[in-house]
Length: 549
Image (cartoon, rainbow, N blue to C red):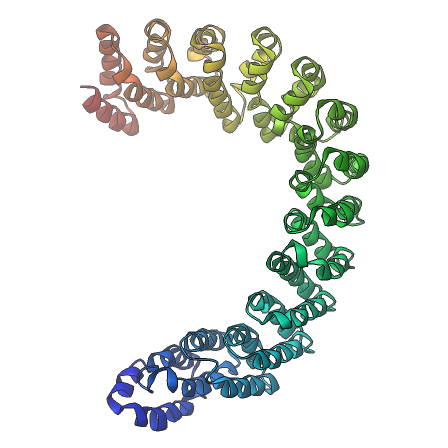
């Protein structure tokens, strides 16, 4: 089959058209692999049959391949069909193409109709206005076909008609969109939402009034999946609609979705609420959106979580005074929720709260919840809380931080979960630009180094990893007087994994040490570790000695 193009070139134009192409029909009952190969080979006969003036002959073979039941064969045939259609003069061969589309539409084979859904948008572009009318009538029959697979495929290809038909046929497109919007299968109507958005974008703000009934229909759809998708796409619809349409239709739509019977729809609306509200005035938000948020505070878990993650982002849109009056009470209600996962969502945008409420008020609001969540049994909650500390320290000041947050950092630095401990290390790094390296050394690092001989293995491991991560940020004096003696002491730790991390730490910090005596002491530790009883320790110690000299 792969040699067919070579044979075609050898036969010449006439024999290729009259003998080779009809001969291909004898393979239609062959195996799937052969048919796929044949579908891929057919476009390569384009020049062999005489170029674009005769390439329509190849479409007859592909038409039959499109009816094959196997989907892989049909897909390959559609791809080849599109390749040839893009290379020929569709207007010149309009009559032949319309006959072919009529045959495929009348075929008893499902795949012929499915293929036709993908081919019609390509054909319609370059044919006459009358031909376009026939193509759109054919497409209408596919949109209203009794088989839901055909209707779904037609809906998926509707958007490819946009911008390709004569303006006089725009009403036909809108009628087709209306048929997709009232299809009895919600999977088709879901695609209709995407099609409607594409059509809104194409026609422009001035000419979209005729599309509004379709939008209202989908907005009130009986299927929650369709309403959910409309809610998800509401900010995109808002961009392509006129301001008066947003005020008259979309604002009430968002309020409606936030009060929908289905929690999934309410979740989708909460997720897109901020993006949508950015296109509204503060008065519109206060009048239509804020009043419907209160019931969501006691909604199901995932609705509350989505609301909690987005409610803070509404504050800058309505201003400090209105946020304090209307949104802050809702935030306080969320912080009283029994679920830590809901509370922690509020802390995902602390900076937004600070910008509206202010540091003093916020410290009184969040401290009870912060202290409670820092003791939560879920490590992800604790990690999320500790990651808030650099911003809190920057906003609330050193004295408040030392009183309320420093004890939490010291406790979580030795948490049972590695991710929390590692998160604390990163937070300590972030605190250096805020409070200075001296404060970190005296308030955190010095006390951590006292754990070098602790009975608990996890604390000693945490310490050496802490040193490895922060040593390059600490002062030379602290390194010489505290860190290096601590490292040398831990080189004789009874646990091999500690000694292994000591080797890695020495290798990492050695180049930053300038003091000769300190370097010598680290080399002595490496030489001892190079004779360690553990093979991994010896291996890495030998590598470190090569680097450190």
